[in-house]
Length: 267
Image 1 (cartoon, one colour):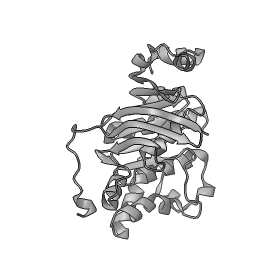
Image 2: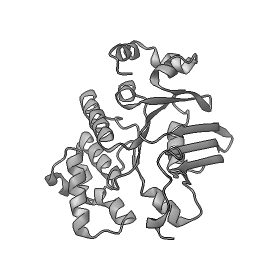
Image 3: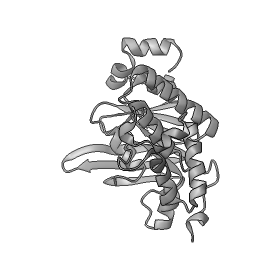
């Protein structure tokens, strides 16, 4: 069976992300305990929680960078840790990840950073790769001249955009974001959120996002999951989560800033 022939589940036949009974332990520290979570196709899920609650750990388990101590994670109906390397490769082609600090390869140009997944996971000639790289640059509102810059020559906002272009290079069905606006000033963060929202609406991909920033959450998420006490204590629309009587929910969503955002009708 070739990677191109791995069957894709029919639309609506299963969640894009399906987490069942996931527990995570590092030595004596329990991070997650028996987590269940579904993310349907086209949803934008914001994952919030306190420092050390295991948000980024769960994100890394979703994409197969970490192995949970117990339970299972499936993307598109397949285990991200499937024993068959052909299936793992096929699943990998269907999602992109934006790391917190961009995680660009410092020794590669902007062009080669964006081209990297195309060369690693697709069988394309260099002419097609070139066209796709310039297309992705345009999608994130960068110009062809930026392709030849090195990461050290980029501003923080440009690093985020290049990393987003790389995450979108394979035209993924799922985009995974780890603190997408971390390190950006409010104006740059707002512009970046608007860009992601526009692309999600145009392309229809599913998003799962870890953020501690309420404005980012309000600007993107159609659903929210709250991690606290080693488990998901609330999951639903923002309005449904706000109705949950839990200390973290109250502390996170009931600050003066949170109330102001809610009154603007964003959350």
